[in-house]
Every structure is written in C-alpha cells, then in structure tokens.
Length: 231
Image: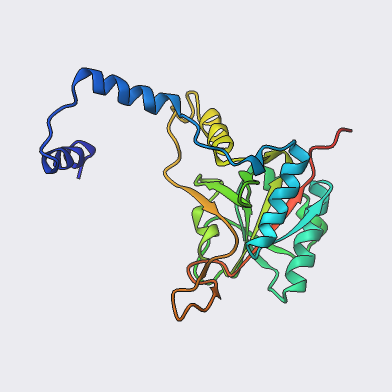
C-alpha cells in the first residue's frame, strides 16, 4: 500500500478533510523547530561528569563496561571480556569504518565476521553512535554499516563507543542525528530505525520474576574509548 493510500485511509477514518492553511503552517513549524522538552537537571553537567553519569547508569541497568585509552586497546578489552564470560571467540561485527580501523590483528584468536547477525551468532560487536548519560542509554540508528540485527539476535552484545559521543539528555542525541543526516547523502531523512538500548533485554512479565535476555541480548557490554583527552 502506498504512502498516499495509507494517509488517505487515516483521513477518511477521522472524517476529516485537508487541514486549513493556518493549521498546516503551524504543523510544519512544529516539525521544523524540534522543540526541546523538559531536560532533567541531572544530565546538565560538564562533559566529564556526563561520562561518569552514563557509566553509573549503565551499571544500574545491568550492563557492564570497560574503559580504554585508544583504539589499540579495544581488541584486548573485547578478548578479556569474552574470556571472563566463557564466550566463544567467533564474533559477528558491524562493517563500520571506525571498527575496521581497530587493530584486531593484535588478537588473532578473535574470529571476526562482518555483516548481519544470524540466529546462530552468540556474540556481536556493534558500533556505538551516541551514549545518553541521562539514562545510560545507547542510541543505535540503523545503517548498512550498523546492522540492527546485531542489537537483537545475539546473546551477548558488545558496543564500542567513543567518549566524545556521550551527551547529557535525549534531545542532544537527536540534535546530533539530525545534524549528521543533513545534506545530499541522506536528503535530511532520518534512518528507517533508531534503537534506544538501555541495558540487556529483560522482562518481569511472568510472576514478576526478572529474566534477562527476554527479547534480545542477555548481556550488554560497552567498551568506552577515551578520545576526549588532549595530546
């Protein structure tokens, strides 16, 4: 069904014709302005404290993290984590340029395969787009170099995130996404999917018993690269 057919069916269901001109102008003004909502004071902090808040909230939501100094330290951090969890070294990894720039050859026992995750994959390494300190949430927009299946199918998800990409509130994350989608490449359109991941998947629907991995990964581990220090 086409876009016009869908909107036409909605319009008929509401028994409403085209909007008057003044309401149309008001609607487009609202869409273009992106008004900011009430931002909690807890995320209105200098950037170093935003990073600390992000990491505290990660742990609060049953996720774990490792902080490293540079790209060179990422392979060791990933290898140490999967060894500590007794996980296989076969990893499905996002084909992102920043992940490709990491010297994975320093840990030759890691068996990396780029692409989308399959149901049989147990461990994924995803590229972190933005971290949101307010709730310890990861913003993961869908893209060919950031497959959404890596966020859903694997039992363990490892996200590599640069510290410079940690922001305070959700509004700042949306500002970055809109700004980086401007221009001829993306045509000012947002991705088809933007996932917000706060800790591993969990549910307490059955007898109020908390179960991890209910609808996605049971483990979420963030490798945070400190790219904010000078020098």
